[in-house]
Every structure is written in C-alpha cells, then in structure tokens.
Length: 233
Image 1 (cartoon, rainbow, N blue to C red):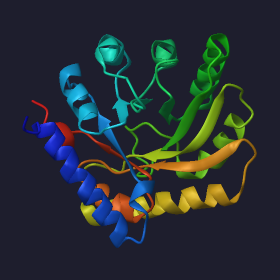
Image 2 (image 1 turned 120 degrees about the horizontal axis):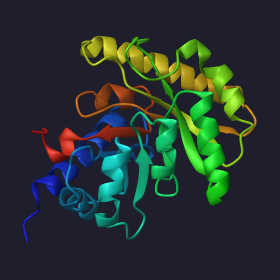
Image 3 (image 1 turned 180 degrees about the vertical axis):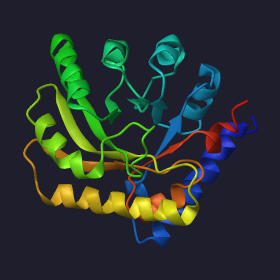
Image 4 (image 1 turned 45 degrees about the vertical axis):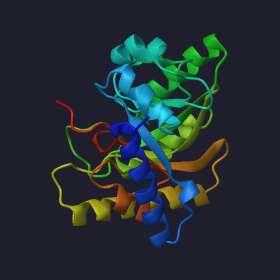
C-alpha cells in the first residue's frame, strides 16, 4: 500500500529535522515532532500516528473533547494542550493530556493543580512566554517569567518542565531568529538557577514555517501542523 500524503510529509520532516539538528551540532533524538491537530479530522490524525507521530498538540478544548475518543491512542502516543486555556475549560482536558503548554498565569496553574488533586493526576506544564511582547497575544512577559515560575513551583499535582513561545507571525525570519535566541537565553538562565521542583527540559518553539531557526536555538519540540497535514481550508 502506498504511503499516504501525511506519512510522506512526516518522513520528509523527520529527515529535515535531523538534518537541521546535526548542522546545529545537536542530537536529532533530542528534538520531538508534534503534530498540531487543529481542525484536522480524527481520520487524518490517526494517519499521522500510523506514520510515526507519537506526540499530538491540541488547540481547542471543545474540539479536542469531540475527537478524543476517535484517536488511535495505542502505544506511546502522548497529547499536549497547546492553545489558550480558560480556567473553566481545565476539566475538559485534564486527565486526557499529559501536558499543558500554554500556562501564562498563576490563576490557571492553580486551577490545573486543584483539579489535578481531585482527579489524582499530576500534569506537566510549560510556561508560555510572550517573547514578542505583543498586546493581543497570550503569554507572560519575559521579565516576569521567573517570579511566576517560583510561584508555580510550590503547587501540588503539577510539574513545570519548560517554556513555550510563539514569535510574532508578521515578522521576517531574521527577527524570528532573534526571538528564538532570546528564548534560548531565558531557558538556559532559568535552568541554571536550579529552582526547587522545576525542571527545564522542554523548550517548545518552532512551527511549520520557522522550525529550522528554532532548532538552531535549542528547541526540543517543534509544533507542526500544515507541514504535516497541508494547508487548512
């Protein structure tokens, strides 16, 4: 049976990610490829899983809940929530995802912690940094990140494992690389402070159009949607 378009895209991306990582002097095995499933039917998501994807990224709580039971979750498929998450939607995703990448307030982290205690689950968190400091974008300002991290560190049933960022989409690639470099610097700085109960293991940045410079600047997880599934219509 011939490979599907999705499987072919994944194979090509795996080769490209490895090539970029090696060129940057990094181990390709330390860069994970996430399939971003926003608006994609479960059928295509399952094709991605069959093609070797083991990490899914969900943007919308309601859409995720509707598709969740149709996903082929056999084996080691892991799901992260990566979209903006309102506190009243936390219960919709908790227990179904292993990580929430879009934490940008103590209020949200506390709600995840409290709901996790009720369910008896511990959820990995990433702190979303608004690296371009855009007024209309989620994420905490870079210079406020450490204070929030220290607050989250004392919460039960959550484990802060890294940072996530989306640079301004209207910028050129040169500017994006500057933002990725700033994120790498912030990531390393926080990691070196060895804050109790905090482990800086994951730097989630880079999407279909800019994953190469993100990997160059230390990304350990690239979030790819259109590069895997094609442009949304």
